[in-house]
Image 1 (cartoon, rainbow, N blue to C red):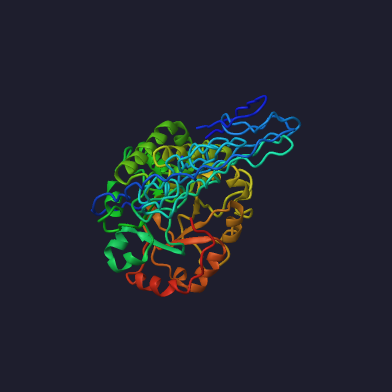
Image 2 (cartoon, rainbow, N blue to C red):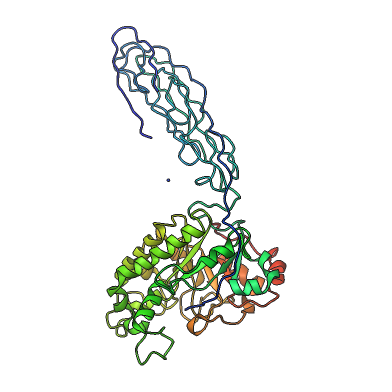
Length: 492
């Protein structure tokens, strides 16, 4: 809220004035209704009226809230400043500028002289679904205590003509995220710990595993031109087989689109004919159909917003092997790194337009080149590659494709390391055990069940592991390992 400062010069005796934001296709299960948060908490009020300062003399005109003046006509003195902005829950404000001598208050419209209310509908959590709106310091239902602005004080006694500096309420703090499943941007996993996940069909086939996992991965997104994944909402919503688990969805939308419309295959599949694959024509096909692909992203984002809601945590792992479209000498019209970054930003924006709280993850290709595919061995840990992307759009980075090395400093056989990648991007890493041709899951990887290995990777910035094809007793393994694992470096 903008502070309004009105300068009033009153000659003679002053009177006090008053003022007033690669491809699994598992089918989904069925489940219950959409989980909703709590009801809105009552509006709180700001602080009691503060007292103004006594008239000052000898300075320049004292200034303050909306109309109040700092006493006698001051000459030579400095201007009194108004109160700081008090914030309530979500957007509590600290009030209008305090006047030199007028009463102050916290919350919304907290002037230095008017009884103010709490924040302008400050909320306990991020929009109050699952942590209801708390105002002015009242306890948010589902969220921690939200505070409005503290009581504003009137102007201090002005001396020598300095106007009393009235202060409004101090900044209030909103409530923490409610426990009803809501989230604010980049709040994904609860509680803070190393996280385990698997494919939805694997979890449902082994129910004893479900209490131990934190997330699940359904079939990959983009297999149609319009939204076709309502089964994910059925699984994850209240009453569903995987209720309370975070959906981590692989968004392969661009690749699926050109494969479906132009009859080409993944790079490691030869059944579509010689060189008729994503590594040869994928970049050109995506570029020529970019607007249509962005619309597919919008369709899926709208679909999830409708059936899952916009407040519960959801993660999208964006376009596995996105780096392949830059292959100079292989792609017919390869992208530059800058083009890749610009196109990815459009995909990310399409999701965020309908799911503003969704967490996005950027793909890891451990063999990235240091300069538009020069020296493609990952030796710079992706420093050059990721510099062309708006990494503020992403909460995570994630592995995809073939298996990853739990027991070594290197992610795979290339030169890129877990620690180096984490240092370059500053993002927590979502690791996986890999998949085969066409996105089929690989077998269990026992190296990712080893506590020593996991703790070493936690130190390198790894936050989770997805065992795509976990063993049937994996739930017991997770339960046994948890107490031996270190706290991760990130708690998004």
